Length: 339
Ligand SMILES: Cc1cc2nc3c(=O)[nH]c(=O)nc-3n(C[C@H](O)[C@H](O)[C@H](O)COP(=O)(O)OP(=O)(O)OC[C@H]3O[C@@H](n4cnc5c(N)ncnc54)[C@H](O)[C@@H]3O)c2cc1C
Image (cartoon, rainbow, N blue to C red; front, top):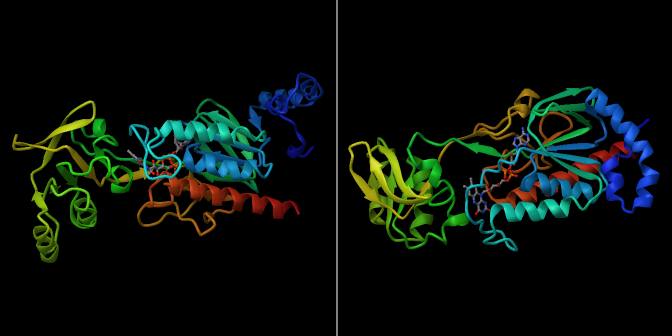
């Protein structure tokens, strides 16, 4: 029997009344039991790994296209520590979880979409079917896989840094710059990245210091430009960010001196949140993003990726836009295959 014809018990419940439910129960219940015994649920057309902004957005386009979708999410979005999210119309100033909870409830209103909180630990492709294994021991299969797994910021070895991340040590002037405007601000970065940030931050506050935490990496033209714009540079190694509940007070240097700051920006490295795209053979860009084309397809047939894991344009709105396109493209592929 085609897996499309199976009716899942949970879907039956979603479909409405007790009377309807009783009509549906016998079929799905036996199917579910069968698959549970095998510990494999083959009942999906698309599995989305990562159920934050990009993943939920892809799921909405797919749910609205009647696709049987499973979202698996380990509930570790990169912005979870930031008190408020900004720069996304309709959602400006909401907490990150308010935005995702609202998105989740809208997406799960589409009866063919399911959500499981779990961690996908393995993904394999056999012929044209993908199988994923989760930490809780579940196995699921689908025809298409979407990675909306985001990235993991790698915290530097500076005491207090991770406690302030997203609160007063921030990554982006568009997300948080307005809230920390006119404050005494540091930029924890060096070279091109620091030089790129400096004009945008200078636009928001007059008191800007670049904290290179080591040998300064600017050419003479850059140094002249920074001086001309009254941007100070401190090259002493940072050992600690002194703070109260994430609100920065002082930056402490290796030589035991300290300087007061009210806010800092930081450019820090990242790694992919999930190793599975690599294990499946996906290509990556030089910067470490999953390589996708305009349609969010990877080089592996049937594997798609969207959101932070594919793009340095890091914002909720961008993740939502990318997920939306990905969901539509995956639906189009499935529709053509079935036509
Ligand atoms: C501190 C901080 C503050 C920010 N503030 C703002 C802001 O104010 N405004 C703004 O527009 N943007 C902001 N951003 C950027 C924004 O948060 C990201 O661009 C956005 O979260 C990307 O969405 P995503 O769905 O691609 O990834 P994420 O939101 O990071 O979600 C990825 C999801 O995938 C899950 N996952 C990963 N691997 C697996 C796996 N193997 N199995 C199951 N689940 C998995 C994770 O648990 C997570 O839930 C901020 C970022 C940071 C770091």
